[in-house]
Image (cartoon, rainbow, N blue to C red; front, side, top):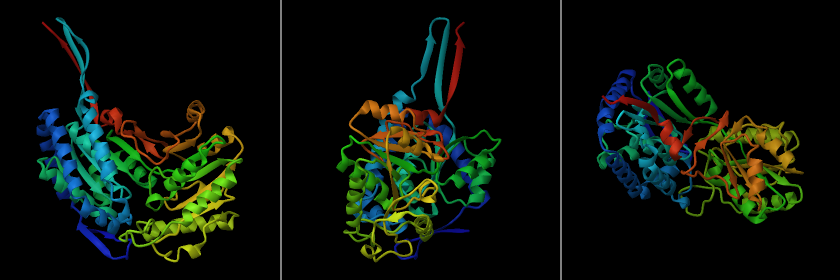
Length: 457
């Protein structure tokens, strides 16, 4: 079976690769298991240095990676790729590794040595998405390798070349080929491997449907799972907010990468005293965008990664308008709209009865609603099946933290949005999934505790 990357730029087949047979996949896992014990026995400092060198080698490829990403998933070249975040996350995890993986000494006396060590799971499967293919992969890849695991990376069919790039860079600096393998697997083989206990841990970033498939495959195996699934992240603008900063950041959070961000802003609640001004400023910003070929430097909004994604957003929009929503962006400003190229849109007069305010859109569209007070905003922000991030806008940190305590979400921002802080645990709740990446907790999830109770005689 071949997997194909259909370029959103022109609908052509940009890349295709043959998937591994079950036998070949089993062999890859066997090599990873054999190589892992030797890898884990190497000093931590060596593993850290090799991963850092591999990250730098990816950075050296950036001039080629940026247009390659535009062809694969549509992000405009003007934004320069993902190496900034890729490097930031890997570097942070390298910097904290010694402390995060340190033994916990309970007692070391003449009578007893009692210690808790963190030991690797063995083989880790990373299933990465197409929307930020380098940054999402490195979230798990770097700490998993540093902690002494071997890793199989399975990337989305939309970004087939990303895993090959990372593998080339990492192998080139000396990370053994069996310790880190880029693999092409179909869904059935992936599920078979998980059900067969091939992995000590599986990290999946993708759809809710995909997450359920991972859980089904792992059922009864007790394999650890880290799942980052859907999102419908809200922003709340309070009456004391810096309005210009709130509009700029929240609209960018809704529209950047054509809205294809895990923690992108998909719904905004604005105190009614600022609502009309907020909407007017938001419309002005969006009207300035240029939708077009992502290979052109002046393009600010590229195509969505696939026509079916664009069509889903179109369907949500049509339904919302039929149910009374108001559209504020004139289609005449975006004549390129069509196929995978999707014009941005701002909707008002929306309600939570509409799919566009309840289901993940993952596109350049946002609904904006007025609210009277914090209580109403909290109720609306929590009225969702998802819980990844929320963005609060106020000059009062105590007020923001009090509201944050009442939100069902993994991360709460104040006066910023759409950012992944590697020092904090990246996690979610409800249909967004479970587990936690990055930070010290990321290391805890990629290892298991092992206790040593040694009585000295």
